Every structure is written in structure tokens, then in C-alpha cells.
Length: 196
Image (cartoon, rainbow, N blue to C red; front, top):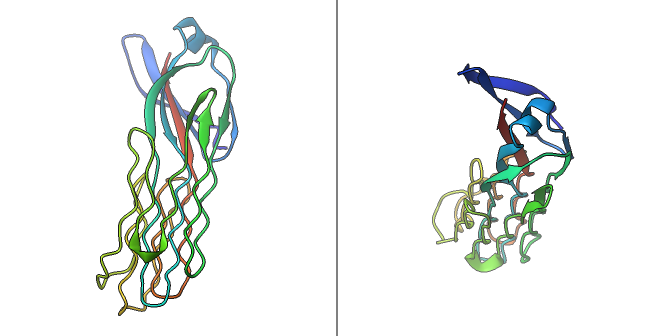
């Protein structure tokens, strides 16, 4: 867990702070936050789905992603769970779904794994993005960026590897090329903002 709390800016006798969680932990509200009613804003991302594994001449789809932006109330300590990355699909198999991330009772499921034969995994959350579908193009399957869906599987010609989902972005992993394994998704993430 990244436990630092940073002041974003101040004004009118109050300031904004945030805390990042890159691993599971506990958010403990300050006395000042509780006195203001405990309102926090969350950027909560599930683990990214793994890219699908290709089969013979069929490239696979990329993993999906999940991202949930919402308000919450934290008047007591809240358990934060960071979802794990979706596993890469072996040759001819779908990628794994990313793990669920949560803040107290609020949760967002991880992105779905990419399927073989070109279908992208599903996204979830209010900012989720489905994984790209393979259109048998000549480009490598790339990971989605921060909360983005995985790229489609590579076409039959290139030999470059697909791209993994970056750590703590929830991005989906790229799909595979031919009879090869896909690429893993990225782990989840949580950022909490509040005003004191």
C-alpha cells in the first residue's frame, strides 16, 4: 500500500488530500474528515483481464478493464482490496479475469479475459473498456493504458510480442498471435480524495 497523504491545494481554510493504494490495506479517516461528514471521492480499478491465447492461425482478443469513479462515505476505517492481474491465456485458451477491487462495501469486478479467435474481454464499472477484437491486422496487441482495454490480438505476420497491462492501472493485456500465449493484465488500484 502507498500510504502517503498529499495536499493537492488549499483555499478557503480547507485543503484537498489523497491517498493511493497499490496493494490492499485500510483507509483510516482523519478527525477532520469525519468532522466534515466523511465524504470521499474514489478512483477504483479492478485488475485488468489477461489477453487470450492464439490458436493456429487465429490471433486472440485483448483483456478488458474496469474503472469505477464514485463518491463514498468514510466515517470509520475502510478495508481496501486491490484486485490481482488477470492471467495470460495459454495457446488456444481465454485469458483470466482480473480480480475485484473494493473500498468498504463498494466494489468493481476486474476486466474480462480476452478470448481466442479474436474476441475481446468485457469491461466493467462506469469507466470500463472492453478489450480490443482481433481484426487480423499487422500490429501487435497492446495493453490499454490507465484503465483502458487490451489491444486486439496480433495478425498472422508480425513476430513482436503483445504488451502486458501495466502494474496498478487495471489495463487489459494484449492478445496473442497464432498458437502462442496471451499477455497478463495489470493489477488494480485505488485512489481516495477528501477535503479537510
